[in-house]
Length: 165
Image (tube, rainbow, N blue to C red; front, side, top):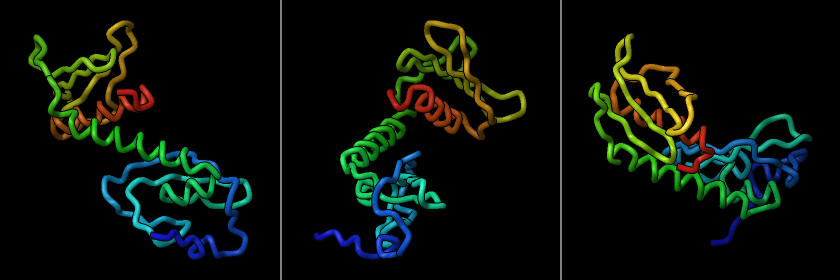
């Protein structure tokens, strides 16, 4: 299949074709967006791109991101990391969760102890504590179910570990 980048914003005057920087990436869970650069491809993994000479941030797919930043491999690598993280997240609930002395589910993962417990305000909260050290991170929200709290804890670990779970 031949790539056709002569449409969408690629054809608009004043839209830079290179020199963009990726500032974030996001997994939408399904192809629920359209690339804002080519305006043709449905995308699941959104690369948010900025350019000093363009006023808006664009959410684009990996192919356009690679062209825009002049480094297709960097865009592919970011997307592969998101895919790996999505796979780990899908398996997270099935990992070897144990019960604490208080009856709360907990899991040791990559040097952290993740614990899910009933919230004082209803629902469930989580904590993430390093196995060595004292800095504990608690959930900022309350979750309807223990499984939702576990998934939120996974997302917190990804943020803390830059995806190295």
